[in-house]
Image (cartoon, rainbow, N blue to C red; front, side):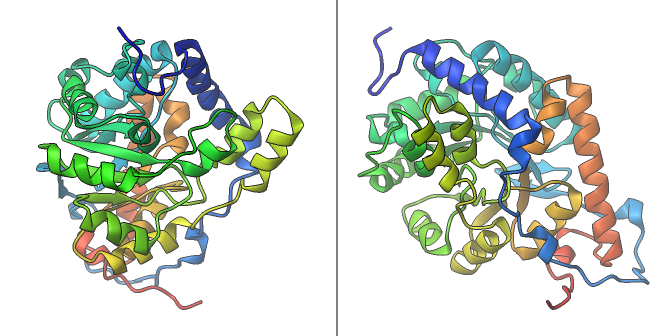
Length: 350
């Protein structure tokens, strides 16, 4: 198959993707994360909730399907063989729990260099939950268009397509794609051309309310803020740097970005009728509850679940079952019988 515009040697891309997983899993990276901002959000405790914990309704509609809890397993990636295993575990777990699942970048699969499990087998494993495809905005600048986007959707029978924004990562990465002229127009073109919704997400530096408004006006269906406080891809690229100067520059930006709580609130204020996903440093079910309270429709989690995703579908189910349990307890302790009530739960000042 002929190489696509901007295609890099497959071994370079596959090695980089697998390196990313190893670095994200390394304990040292956690020390470089920016504060996620959720610790500053404090619910007012309701000592007499007057509701039943088991009967709290966490269900919500998303992309035409009914979720049992307002959670999204956010995009993860890796070299094709490693990704195939991870993607299968995640899809199976999402189906078991009735939550949404977003795949990582489909670039390698689109360029015919190994599917990484990104094929119709995912829909076989998860026939009833929303699955979101994923391409990079940098690839749009290099020539990807509606044809590649349709292939990304069709290869996994996706309910929506994520376009991920990672300009900072590309800027600090050796050989990164740094000409982003025309990307907004390309996204607008995808939104017009595709029969499924387009979702735009950052990868860990956040999306402002002003940008979200421009994206929604361009036809984007949902915004995943993916704010600072989770994985810092500048810090990840610092770990991969081959020389001291590149590493030092990447580390300068390791805590760059809009904290997730701020991004959620700003995007909700700018786009009151838009579907908002709150991700970036969501560590547990309490953080998920705070994200929803601030205006997110769903909370997304990636890195915090990656250890379980490396092991088995059962481990992923166990991890997210605990997240759901914590979210339910947060609802109970705020007197919130459902997700709508949680959006109105009282917060303490300061």
